[in-house]
Length: 88
Image 1 (tube, rainbow, N blue to C red):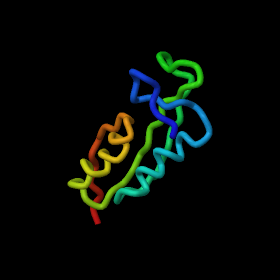
Image 2 (cartoon, rainbow, N blue to C red):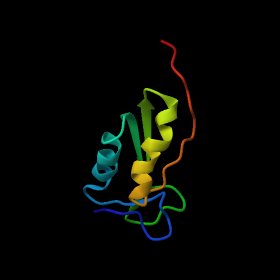
Image 3 (spheres, rainbow, N blue to C red):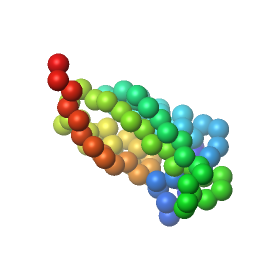
Image 4 (cartoon, rainbow, N blue to C red):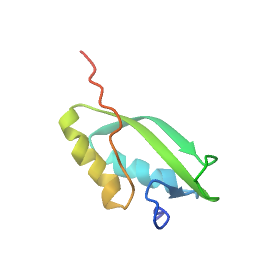
Protein backbone atom coordinates (compact mmCIF):
# COMPACT_ATOMS: atom_id res chain seq x y z
CA UNK A 1 0.00 0.00 0.00
CA UNK A 2 1.31 3.42 -0.93
CA UNK A 3 0.13 5.93 1.64
CA UNK A 4 0.38 9.67 1.98
CA UNK A 5 3.60 10.91 3.57
CA UNK A 6 3.29 11.52 7.30
CA UNK A 7 1.81 14.92 8.03
CA UNK A 8 0.70 15.69 4.46
CA UNK A 9 -2.27 13.69 3.19
CA UNK A 10 -2.49 15.83 0.02
CA UNK A 11 0.68 14.16 -1.25
CA UNK A 12 1.58 10.62 -2.22
CA UNK A 13 4.88 8.83 -2.39
CA UNK A 14 5.90 9.06 -6.06
CA UNK A 15 6.29 5.31 -6.56
CA UNK A 16 4.88 2.68 -8.92
CA UNK A 17 1.29 1.89 -7.96
CA UNK A 18 0.51 5.09 -6.07
CA UNK A 19 -1.92 6.48 -8.64
CA UNK A 20 -3.37 3.01 -9.15
CA UNK A 21 -4.24 2.78 -5.46
CA UNK A 22 -6.25 6.01 -5.53
CA UNK A 23 -7.82 5.11 -8.89
CA UNK A 24 -8.92 1.77 -7.45
CA UNK A 25 -10.57 3.51 -4.51
CA UNK A 26 -12.46 5.78 -6.92
CA UNK A 27 -13.42 2.84 -9.17
CA UNK A 28 -15.24 1.28 -6.23
CA UNK A 29 -17.46 4.38 -6.04
CA UNK A 30 -20.09 5.62 -8.46
CA UNK A 31 -17.57 8.00 -10.06
CA UNK A 32 -15.90 8.30 -13.44
CA UNK A 33 -12.33 9.67 -13.56
CA UNK A 34 -12.07 12.10 -16.48
CA UNK A 35 -8.67 13.68 -15.76
CA UNK A 36 -5.61 13.11 -13.58
CA UNK A 37 -2.85 15.64 -12.90
CA UNK A 38 0.31 14.36 -11.23
CA UNK A 39 2.37 17.26 -9.84
CA UNK A 40 5.81 16.71 -8.41
CA UNK A 41 7.69 19.88 -9.27
CA UNK A 42 5.77 22.50 -7.29
CA UNK A 43 6.96 24.37 -4.23
CA UNK A 44 6.22 22.51 -1.05
CA UNK A 45 6.22 19.04 -2.61
CA UNK A 46 9.27 17.16 -1.31
CA UNK A 47 11.48 14.98 -3.47
CA UNK A 48 10.02 11.52 -4.22
CA UNK A 49 6.51 12.79 -3.47
CA UNK A 50 3.72 13.99 -5.74
CA UNK A 51 0.41 15.77 -5.46
CA UNK A 52 -2.26 14.12 -7.61
CA UNK A 53 -5.46 15.88 -8.64
CA UNK A 54 -8.34 13.78 -9.96
CA UNK A 55 -11.26 15.28 -11.87
CA UNK A 56 -14.28 13.04 -11.62
CA UNK A 57 -17.87 13.06 -12.76
CA UNK A 58 -20.79 11.55 -10.91
CA UNK A 59 -24.42 10.92 -11.66
CA UNK A 60 -25.80 12.77 -8.67
CA UNK A 61 -24.16 15.54 -6.61
CA UNK A 62 -25.56 13.92 -3.46
CA UNK A 63 -23.03 11.09 -4.04
CA UNK A 64 -20.03 13.37 -3.43
CA UNK A 65 -19.70 12.52 0.27
CA UNK A 66 -19.67 8.78 -0.37
CA UNK A 67 -17.18 9.18 -3.24
CA UNK A 68 -14.81 11.30 -1.14
CA UNK A 69 -15.05 8.83 1.75
CA UNK A 70 -13.10 6.13 -0.15
CA UNK A 71 -9.80 8.03 -0.39
CA UNK A 72 -10.31 9.54 3.06
CA UNK A 73 -10.58 6.14 4.73
CA UNK A 74 -7.20 5.28 3.17
CA UNK A 75 -5.68 8.45 4.73
CA UNK A 76 -5.70 10.53 1.55
CA UNK A 77 -7.00 14.08 1.46
CA UNK A 78 -10.12 14.31 -0.69
CA UNK A 79 -11.99 17.57 -1.16
CA UNK A 80 -14.72 18.79 -3.47
CA UNK A 81 -13.37 21.90 -5.19
CA UNK A 82 -16.23 22.71 -7.56
CA UNK A 83 -19.65 21.30 -8.20
CA UNK A 84 -20.96 21.64 -11.74
CA UNK A 85 -24.25 20.20 -12.91
CA UNK A 86 -24.54 19.12 -16.52
CA UNK A 87 -27.86 19.65 -18.23
CA UNK A 88 -29.31 16.76 -20.09
